[in-house]
Every structure is written in C-alpha cells, then in structure tokens.
Image (cartoon, rainbow, N blue to C red; front, side, top):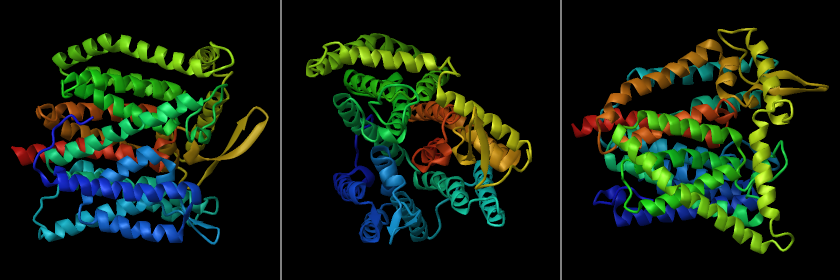
Length: 486
C-alpha cells in the first residue's frame, strides 16, 4: 500500500530499502525470541548493539522501526522489561530504539555544523513546559509517602520521555520524501496486521487477546491494540482514497474492509465510536470534491464488505463440523450484545466500573483542582460491595487522568499545545496540495485517538500513547516542509 512511487532519493533507493529491510528483520527476530524467553541481559546486549549499528547512520530508520515493531508486536516490543536475577527493570526495546534515533539526529545535526534551522515556536515551548511539569511532578512524588515510586516513574516516562518523539519527527522529517516514508511505514504495518485478522477468524480467538478480557460473553478475533492501530490506519487510507492517490483503489478498498472487519471483531466498542467520529471529522475537513469522491467510493464498495463477510463466515462454517450455523449465530449474538451494552450501563461491568471510577476520580481532583494530586497516587474505588484501591493512571480516561494528577495547570498546558499545533499547521497543509490528503488523514486519526482516549488509558501506555506524539509531530512537519519547498 504505497501511495507514492519511489524515486532516486537515498531514503527510498534500493540499497536503502534493503538496508531497512535487513534491520527490521534482525530486530524483529530478537523481539520474537523475547516472546518465548523474556528479555534477559544476554538478549538485550546484542539487541542494543544491533540497534545502534543500524539506527545511528539512519535516524529516520529508528522512527520507522518504532512504528512498525510497535504495530506488529505491541507489548512484546514496548513493554518487555529487562530481567536480571528475577529483578525487573523498566528498560524496553522501544526505549532503546527511540534513544538511538535521538542520538542519531543529534550526531547528524553536529555533522552539519549546526547549520540546520530548528523550529521552536509556541507549540514546542508548550510541549517542553508540559515535559518539565511532568518531571517536577515526578520529583515531588519522591517526597510523598502516599506515592508509589515505580508508578510515578512510569507515569513520568509516558508524559515526559515519549513526547520526545514529537521533536524527533519535527526535526528529522524535513522534506516530502521522508514524510511519505513514515506514512507508508504506518500503512504497510497495518497491511501486515491482516495476517492477525485471518489467524483470529480461523482460531475463533485472536492472538494476545487474553490481555483485555471481555466484560460480556464472546471472544475477540483481533487484539484491542491491533484494532487501535487499524483505526487510525483506516482513516489515513480513506483520506488518500478521497484524493485518488492509489493506483489500484479496488485492492485498497478490499484491504480497508478487512481492516474494518478486524476492528469490529476486536469487540472494542470505543474504537467503533472513535472510527465513526474520526470519519465524521474527515468528511468535515475534506475539500468538497474529495468528500464527494469518498462517499461514492464507500457506497460502491459497501457490497464488497458484505461479500467478504459472507465468504469468511461461510468458509469458517464449512470447517465447523458441529452445527453449520453455529459460528454465524454466535458471532452475531456477540456483536448484538456488545452494541446493546453501550446503552445498558448497569448490565455491563466494564461501563459501570468506569463510571464509578470517574466519579471517584472527580471527587479526588476536587481536593486540589489547580495542581492535581501528583503522580503515583491511588483512588479508593467502591462498586457495590466491592472495594479496591486503583491507580489513577489506570482510570481508563486519559484527559481525566491528567486532570486529576496534574490539575488544570497540566491539562490546560497539553490542550494549548495541541490547539496551537493545529492553528500553526492548518494553513500550511491546506495549501500544500501534494501532501494535503496525508495531513487531513492524520487530523482524522488524531481526532479518533482523542475520542478513544476518553475510554482507555491510551496516554498512560507507551504502545498506544506514542502515536499521539507521532501524529502531532507529523502534522507539525507541514510548517517545516512547506517552507523548504517555497
């Protein structure tokens, strides 16, 4: 799924492509090994050496690896901790790749004798302020007896370290070819997830779905994180389709419907809503001609979706020796229950748990509405006769989690950062005809992320939160790329 042809740029030359492919295969092999053996020191050391050898000469490769390995291997790449003598240290393969990417960009900047112009205006100042605030809150947590230091450290890492991806993208992607390389990486990684959809449908349960158990009956055909990645991939593809950027729209349409089947099969209700919301935002921001073409495309391809669903269901029923209609009936019942549960708060433990948690969080925030309660804190949660202390970062509502922990000060700083990224980038990519469909797709993807973050701790988990900073960084590159081509 490459919407733009390769050219003679070093980043897209055959030699560079082979180099990137070898790097991805080597590092992916290490990640696969950690699935079975964990991450002991004897595996981490060669991973560090190889990552450094591959990434330092080409820092943009590190950004691509961050995206592709996260989208495919999710928590095995992003949350696999170093273990030494049964002690766990929160150093992840993701951190190593990001670290080498940052170091590579710094070395590249020094090689250019610091002549490269660095963009650092209001959005960047606001993000740096948010990072510094997070570090201050972490330091303060060290002196708070009610704070759990390990939890405070993880929170600070998600709010202060991973936002560095924004700066890596902003300073590393300075032309159209590099920008398209990253977008193509996202789409190709999404294409690889079709394999996970097929495995889930054949097995009757997707790989790694046990991490997020259902609050209703049934089984997921795709892991929630994979469905999360496909949600924003779908919106980017829809934007490119509206601008007729694909040479084979029929094939792309088929892949898109497979993605949507995967999202539905994940049974992640908030992702259904996020995809719908992102689609509405996309229709709103698209030019009228592009909007009309997209609606025509969706109308024409709706029959393709129905056909693919029927073919898959019939094929799986042929393999089901006990009851020809068993699979279809079970699947339809599960989907109906998940949809109906959206309007039945009392009957769904997941929804009722969230509502109770949010109520308790609001009461806790009122104790210090301006500055918040700090990192590493817990909330006394009562649901009926069930009582437990839950970590604030696990509140399943990222904006509320930031509000409770960092108060109005923290959440307003983050809100202003996002607002000014849009404000200072909007005119740049609206007038940039060749890249405008990409940027509008990113806007829709970011809108879907924000909508979904009201129902999951997406900014509190690195395997999802990194894409918030990646999308904002990619959107902001419009201010750099448009100036370099003017």
